[in-house]
Amino acid sequence: MILTIYTATTMMIIAYLLGSIPSAVWIGKKYYGVDIREHGSKNAGTTNMLRVLGRRAAAPVFALDFLKGFVAVTIIELMQYDDLIGANDLINLKIGAVFAAVLGHIFPIFAGFRGGKGVATLVGAVTGIYPPVALLCFGVWLVVLMIFHYVSLASIVAGCCFPAFTLISPKVNGSIPFVVFSFIIAILLIYTHRKNIERLKAGTESKIYVWKPRHVTIHDEGKDPGKDSGAKEEPK
Image 1 (tube, rainbow, N blue to C red):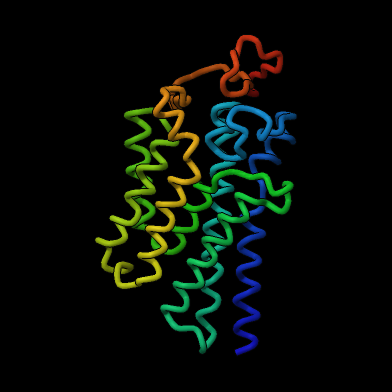
Image 2 (tube, rainbow, N blue to C red; image 1 turned 90 degrees about the vertical axis):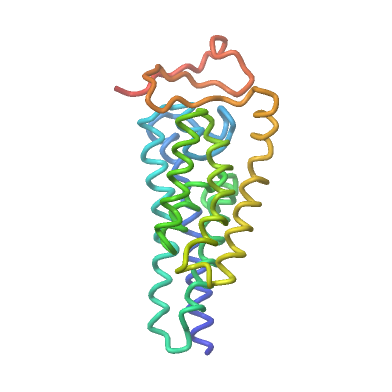
């Protein structure tokens, strides 16, 4: 029993440390000489990287953030070899790993506890638990983004669909902890995007045109890009 508790605790710590890998901060500083937390929405995540530094910078950030969430949950599978861990216990541990990884992304120990909102990490982690639900949510996110061009709106809508998809999925709707988890995630996504919601209401939220070619200029939200002396073009 003691060894099981020790192993489970270690897994949660590993999940937090994986989530704490600040890919946006490290990539921004190393390859662009920019601390992404000082520009745009000041959020260390994929959307702000896309808005400030462009697709070439945002793509690896999304991939790494997704991967760290996926790995944080997937390694929990090692616990299945413990005779004291049943199927429900395994799901509960994975849910715990999701929270630990997302918490690490939001409050990264490797970046002064200033991170992002954890959406990409959350998607990767949920994919590690039950890929079909994650794919359905991603489909909703992509459709909303293509129609309205607001990443925040797409994330909120996809997050709110998460509980609905969970309830209609026979492989997970029997797990009360996972159902509760899906509702908590939806509420947390709305909460973490509360400033975006205010900007959406005011009509000041920045739009993202994923396929639209453009020259990238670093500027802070609410500031005239033309007056920003820190303009940088995306590396060719």
